Image 1 (cartoon, rainbow, N blue to C red):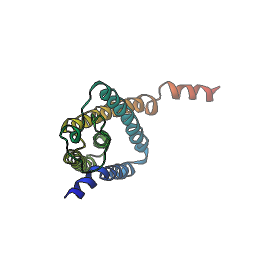
Image 2 (spheres, rainbow, N blue to C red):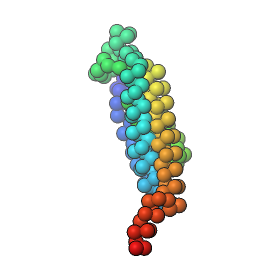
Image 3 (cartoon, helix red, strand yellow):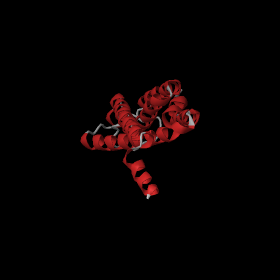
Image 4 (cartoon, rainbow, N blue to C red):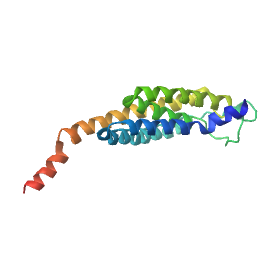
Length: 170
C-alpha cells in the first residue's frame, strides 16, 4: 500500500497535466490561445501568492513534528503551501472554465494526490488546502484577466487593433 501512496504523492500529477493537454487539444482552435494564456497567467499568479504565503506562514512538515519517517525522502523545509496541490489545483480550476467534464476527472486525481501527500507524512491537510486555495484564486484571476483582455483587445478591436488599422490606412 505504501508504494501506491508514494506513486500517487510523487507522480500522479503528470496525469493531471496530460488531461489538461487533452482538454486543451479538444478546444476549438480559436479558443486554444485563450486557454493556454489562462493557464500561464493563472500559474504565475498562483505561484506568486504561494511564495508570499510561504514567507508569512511556516508550517513544519508532519514527519518533522511527529518524529516519524516519511514514505519518501523530502527536505525538512516549510510545507506550506504544497506545490503539488498548488499545481493540480490551478490546472483543475482553469480546466473547469473550459471543459467541466475533463475538470471533474482532474479533480479526482487532484484529491488523490493531496490525500497521498498527507498519508506520506510530507504535508499536513493545511498545506494541501492552502495549495488548492491559492491555485483556485490564481485560476480565477488568470482566467478572468485573460477573458477581459480577449474581449477588449482581441475580439472587439480596442487600442491594439486601432493602432494597426491606422498604420495600414496611411
